[in-house]
Length: 308
Ligand SMILES: Cc1cccc(C(=O)O)c1OC(=O)C1CC1
Ligand SMILES: [Zn+2]
Image 1 (cartoon, helix red, strand yellow):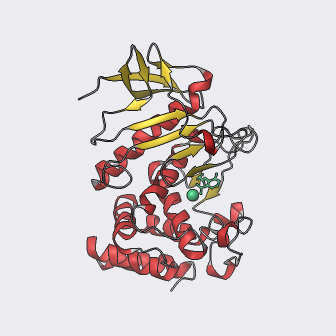
Image 2 (image 1 turned 120 degrees about the horizontal axis):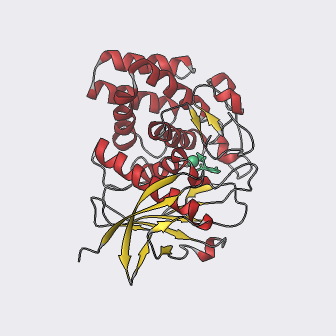
Image 3 (image 1 turned 135 degrees about the horizontal axis):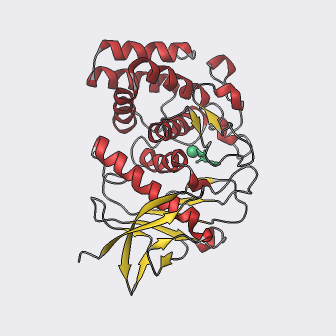
């Protein structure tokens, strides 16, 4: 039963207007996108500052299909950007939703209070509102939404274990596809990071050191596999594969790089792949798709960060 779809609009986190695919039922409009090429839906829900036990949260409705309330801003961006990331994976690689099987994409905003985090929690995305100092609402940046949804892609494919080098690769692939969705700069999270300060970001692919990440194996941080150890430094040591990606993209361009990275992630990488395995997977993917020029560029990129 094809539900009635509507073209709505709304105001995002940064006060900008954007289009929304909505669903009309019971004489009101829902933040539900059924117009995608799949049986599943893109749902965006409101946790009303509850925690994990409130998930998945509550429907977000609007009587005139203009989601312009301040309280709706985080949801407007989470919904719009989830649709953009769905379209990216479908149009570029033919992947239908994060698992290739058209599963529902569920995003919940207003998770907890002053929560400076965003996450894929295994079956859905959650977005904090930030505390207004470290972060504005985290769905306000397309590279963050792409980062989170790419965790879902990774879990459905390579399923890289979230610790030590496999975990740093997990993080890096999310940052790299975050870049592919927001290729105007090499920064991650800049649109919502420190709203009171211009020009900074959560991470930099071109210069990981800027935000205390290593950019070479001789700076690899040995940390414990604990929460405070960032599970062996998954958000820290990701600077090394991130820098290799920066070198690669500069050498062979974005179009070829995204095909190579997608092929490595979905065909060659496995749960315990380490940095050396990732180098090999990317070289093999480049050879499969293009040839020795691209493969050699990747080899050099990883040698430049001390992975041989
Ligand atoms: C802000 C934040 C905190 C903890 C984990 C993640 C996580 O998703 O790994 C996280 O989100 C990001 O890293 C996205 C890129 C900004
Ligand atoms: Zn992440």
